[in-house]
Image 1 (cartoon, rainbow, N blue to C red):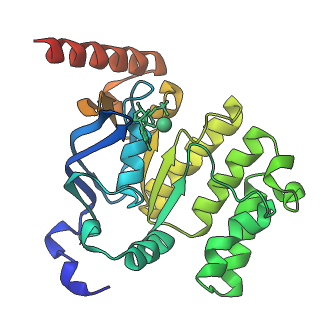
Image 2 (cartoon, rainbow, N blue to C red):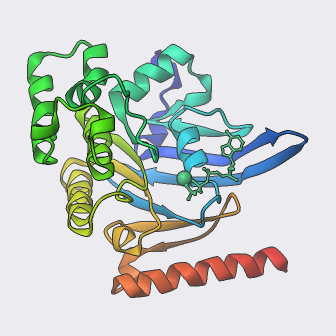
Length: 263
Ligand SMILES: Nc1ncnc2c1ncn2[C@@H]1O[C@H](COP(=O)(O)OP(=O)(O)OP(=O)(O)O)[C@@H](O)[C@H]1O
Ligand SMILES: [Mg+2]
């Protein structure tokens, strides 16, 4: 990867999305999923995306991670225009910088829990100390006793924690997490939110988390509301003094978005 693409003026902005559009063709129809999404994340920011089912949240995360090319618009990470990177360069960037927790986990069925977590590191031929750190993450997430199990012998919550461990094991500077607490009990969910907050505030990791849960979003700095492929509202969580008020603010944003769309 050349340094040419690295634009110094964007150093503070970790991730920038500008006018991103994406549609999918299905039989004879085209579904417009993202309709001009623009936002940026500053280094060390912890941000939530909330939105109804089907509003395009997972699609947006895939575009941000360089896994799905947008139809138009741009995404840059650390000043690198990801649309200008080759597949090899994008894979390398992802392996070094982006920890992704997929909504469907995407664990490899034939590998054990430990192998799933260590695989991205083995692909990078990291040294022993990095592998030990990754094993510590497995312990911290309460999975050590299960490390030799394959995914089909794990509960939904254990699979989710395995996906989280795999994302954190690469020591990412950007974490993209798609409903990472959906299968966790409320205590494990809140512990994970606390961990994310610590990673953002003490280690300047930049974190974008998709969630339906106001109790998760309240941990973040800012909420982006996605509706029908557009960001219809954005608000800082410090403007909400409780989980309930965040939920109300979110519902209100959705209704406002609906009003604006019909006007
Ligand atoms: N590969 C694809 N081919 C065709 N349509 C797709 C594809 N991926 C997503 N879609 C459609 O795009 C829309 C948005 O999907 P997406 O998964 O991004 O929604 P979401 O906001 O993450 O929903 P949920 O909260 O249910 O996870 C849906 O209508 C979905 O059917
Ligand atoms: Mg989704």
